[in-house]
Length: 226
Image (cartoon, rainbow, N blue to C red; front, side):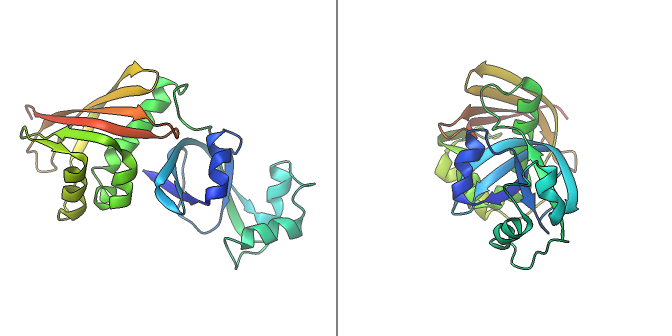
């Protein structure tokens, strides 16, 4: 799952749908698709958006490109950017990342399927060992019925995942989305380990939090034919 850190003062603008772009320099590569903003001061505070485009240009061209030449003369823009990137210059190439409003209850099915698929698969990869990521993604009332038929709660799941040995994650496929309410959806898919064992059918129930981010409420894995 693509992620970017964001200063807390800008999150309300993102949540309200007013802030639709971010300017970045020498950070991770971002491409069109789902993106998770993470509060720089509170890693459990996240906002999900969809990146619609990425433009690269010198910093000196950004104000005109965004139609903010009057608001952002070179000196003002450079001073603001140097709060985050002290070594940046006007001739530095930056990325202007354009994105949607938060992906919430009015998100179309295709975008929501893409977002929840990315969030789900993040739990199969490196981020499954990140306690902060797990605490942000799993609903306070989360529970799971494991593939072996054991019921576990949120704390047990977080402790197990954050402490487990690193190993290749499962191969996931055949994702389908069931819209179950204005603020809820169920993701259904298949997994199998890279060696062809432990095939499973899986379902995850996702709910939209009061802050506008999607969290997993319930997960179940059931053994399936390979």
